[in-house]
Image (cartoon, helix red, strand yellow):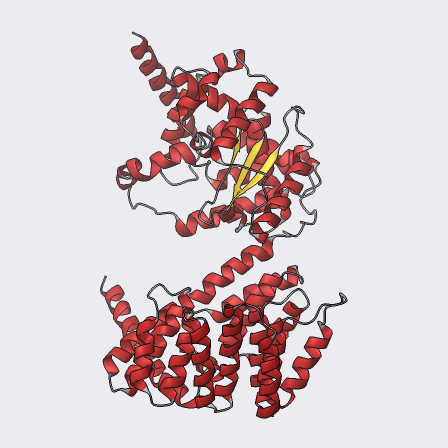
Length: 583
């Protein structure tokens, strides 16, 4: 009998909903989402009366939330990643400002980053634990947008959506709040899944009110919804018929039933009405998104790997414009400028890096860029950089890498005296890896000066004291192949471990094999290996970068391989276009 009454109730509710919808103009395409929301809301709202009667105290909710947070691994321990620490601090600053206007003052709020670029979401745990995904932060354009999102999640706690959601789930399993362990650890999926449509709208509306009370523009929420609308338009899969859409319910719409929010267009329209009703200042100036340079740098890294150097540089220039002291962006700008063949741009960006703390690689890139962009004044300019960045602490000196690069530049002008200075520098170094790195760097400058035999001796000495260095082995391969010692070069390539320390090192390995194979008339293998190198590191398709780093004879061979690879890519593109046209 009970099941019949429930079925009758659901049927009646469905009829009422259909009657109401028939009287309103349809403004969205037909989807299974309204039916799913109707079923979900009906089921969940039926539970709210007993949950309100058995309301959990703020203190008990805090204990429950803390337990779930521990199970999920949320912690206030500082991350080893500097960017993650900065994001977490920013979330706390903005979040606490918004949370200062909540009704339930006994709940203390904590804010965490879920450091996953594929997690484009945020959720709230009972007791005030708010988690925001890195993927969601990456699409934001202002601090006001972040305030609206945090306000939304805070309301899920302040208005008891989160704790009531947990009560409902526990009640459905017939266990009490004292038996959370029966839920499994962690039980966060409950809160990632979202809430009823009514609760989501309530969180949007009241959350924006909290953000405005904290001094933020009401347009933060509206702008974010507009961006969500665009994402839905660009990336959502649209079936061609209602039947096709319902056929997708088991795979996509059920996920929406548990996880998604209402359509972004509806949420935006509701927020715009709230702004008018409350007479909020829609013209208020938006606050800059202070952590945006982090996500611009992330985007630049993806563009770099996708062979879009100019797009990457554009993003990095935006990043340093927002935050002129963001070392990561300056360093990436220097590296990509160099990979694009822009030595002067690399010098300019590295000069900014030096003021904020340079690594050994920074000094190396600066010296090479100086030697390429302004060879006559390279030594004087590097000396000027070293004086400008001389440590102010008494007793400290320049890092050895800076001195080694100066020795290398001087070698181009005065070999004898430069080698004496280098031997003095080398004797002061501690550790075989450090000494081997210094020998390898000086060998590069010897190659640039045309002293290939001297370079071989340096590299062989480096391998004697630190034989596991793939970088040193690769550099020796380049010198041996230029000397015409192809058998020795092939032998050295065989020593390089398959699990190279980085993708770019693996790409250089493939490029070196291609050059050796070209010189030994193995043209098919050479083209195949160069194709792999260009796929892993697009810089191999940039002639100026190759010319700045390798000998003229090697650059000539790679130019032929680049032409062959460009023709192959063009042919593949034409074929794909022909296939697309036929379909």
